[in-house]
Length: 275
Image (cartoon, rainbow, N blue to C red; front, side, top):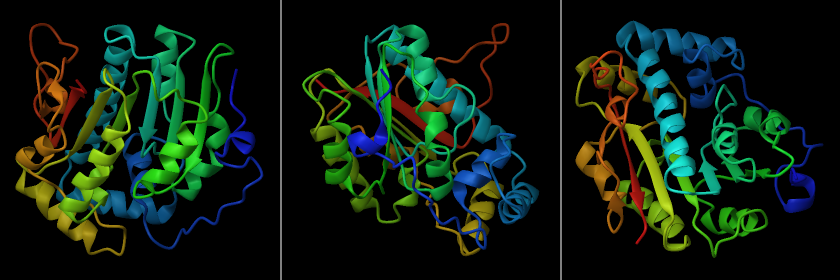
């Protein structure tokens, strides 16, 4: 059954969050790059300014989303995962985590976590589950790990393996040591046989990408820190990386066009299993 968030400690269906449309927001800009309609003029202006400096960002956004779809399908179809904790959900689009997982097994249970007011407005859309499964939405910042884990435990069974997805969110934690601490605390709460899916932005392929991010971080929006693949690899310490390891998101088990892999983009990710 679909979990009622008002009863489970998730987002209240009657909540009326305040949306600040005076500054651009990364989730809404991302939505704009993906062709969505859940954004405002300030987001479209910021998104267009970014694309003027680095036109490839829209493709990176699409490929990052495709990475999420492939990894969730892998966890559900090949690794047998039936529970997912998706932190940094972003705005709903096609093939959300619960849709991908529940296509494999309708009994899958998914908890979404985000703190963006516009995502909260769309919580009801995110909470559309199969009758056999369940979804919930937690309104929380990723730094609030105790709150997230306590609320998620009302829908997920932490004695059984869980797929934790952190897609494009850790770059918002400016201090790298703090980012590592957050991930390690979340992974520590998961039982053996669980998986971490994590991808974030790098600047290894394009100087224009770095310049565009520098300008974005000076715009008044919440900053996003690009990190090296070596830094991103540290999030997976203690885990068993699934082949092909930590790679550009386009190169993680891609859907081939002919015999060609898509070109790499400035987003690196991987899947790690907790022993």
